[in-house]
Amino acid sequence: MMKDYGHISPLVSGDVVPEGIDLVIERDSPNALDRTLSDTSIGAGELSLSRHLSRLAQGDASFVGIPVFPSRSFRHRCFFVRHDSKLESLEQLQGKRIGCNEWPATGNKWSRAALRHAGVRIEDIRWSVGSIDGAPSSRPQGILPAHVQAVTDKALLSMLLAGELDALMCPVPPKGFYVEGSPVIRLLRNFRQAEMNYYRDTGIFPIFHIVGVRREVYQRGP
View 1 (cartoon, rainbow, N blue to C red):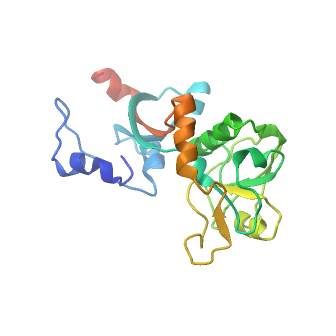
View 2 (cartoon, helix red, strand yellow):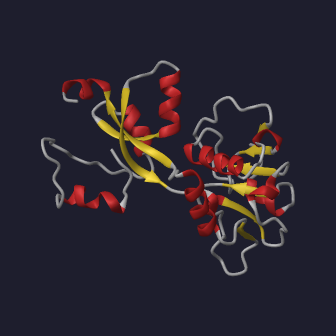
View 3 (cartoon, rainbow, N blue to C red):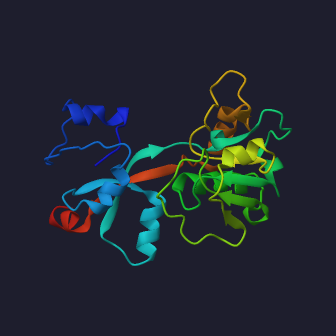
């Protein structure tokens, strides 16, 4: 079970055939990660790295993670501010008010790692977690740290535009970002250079998702 990525198309089409494996790939972009866990007919599939590690820490070893990474990306591009904001660097987010869509999400963990790399103290930021555009979400937020508040009565984007937040941290640009004259812009105008600098400094190309194999399947044929 995988999301519908272009880079797995050769496996899906049969142009690339793995040796010794009878592989059938099902694609379900909206629900792939949840179905990997809930559908016992699926022997292996895409997993959130963060949630996989959390399950292991809680004693759930039902999946074996293997070093196949269907989703990975840098996160400096994932910070957004109002178009009239004077903020233009990660360092300037020290002590600010930031909204994000999920706290435990792997991508947001990497975003916080980018902030730490820039010298920003995560615990000094006033965090709000909720829906970016107001759409409902069924994903659990887990237990939030003391410096993080859950927002359930309004969209974080509207809070940004109203001046109640200084920035948003989210995996995709907020609604209306690509519209001409958008009130929202990226915090880092040259995010690509920032990401190259991060890789040069750390050697890290952030991993979001891994492939997990059900333990009973793994034990039959490791």
